[in-house]
Length: 261
Ligand SMILES: C[S@@+](CC[C@H](N)C(=O)[O-])C[C@H]1O[C@@H](n2cnc3c(N)ncnc32)[C@H](O)[C@@H]1O
Image (tube, rainbow, N blue to C red; front, side, top):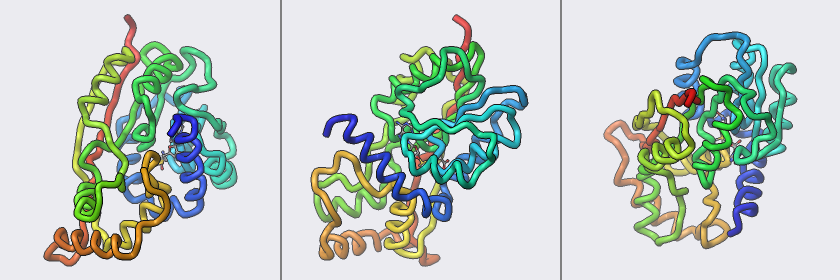
């Protein structure tokens, strides 16, 4: 599928989830809070929330910094943000591969669980470096290979279709950052396991978040009832003694700087 079409599909899927997103964003809240605890505290900073979604964290950032910009690919996400968040935030409907901001204009780029949707990732980092001021900082989180492994393995017992998006390895992110010329201060991988009542609960959460569709998936539409049954039977193998269904997320958190050459 051509890149622009994939981006349109990503924007549409997140847009459709704009009203259900916040109630299901458990992992996103957790990782965003981690990022917040690493922020420099200069009130005068110009801060960009890249892939801001419903604007929850842009809103938190607006309590700490004078100038906050929320950027997202999805118009519907931004419409939701405009209605529900601090009126001083500036909203930009744009692609993070092509950010409509001047060179050297941003002090802090905050990006929570958005760059995993970017391809090629290196181009997004090059664009971030362009807009960052010298000594500006990028604080981000993403998801790495091994995320939703239980679901991926359970689907593999049914077919070879792509049911879970491909996530980067930590080394891919490191290489992309190095190519972009940004300097890594911190880059970590941490597994986070969330509990679900059943597999339907997991599927509903992913759908509510706009994260249930795989852009390059070869087959369209819902999987048949039999495939779903077979997959959930395979997932039963992960049921814990406490009676919950775990789903593992491999969380990547990073802090990088636009250091002087
Ligand atoms: C999982 S949501 C995270 C939203 C928010 N950062 C949060 O913490 O809740 C990912 C967001 O990234 C946006 N996104 C995906 N690809 C993008 C791109 N190329 N440029 C800008 N935003 C993008 C999506 O539209 C979506 O709103």
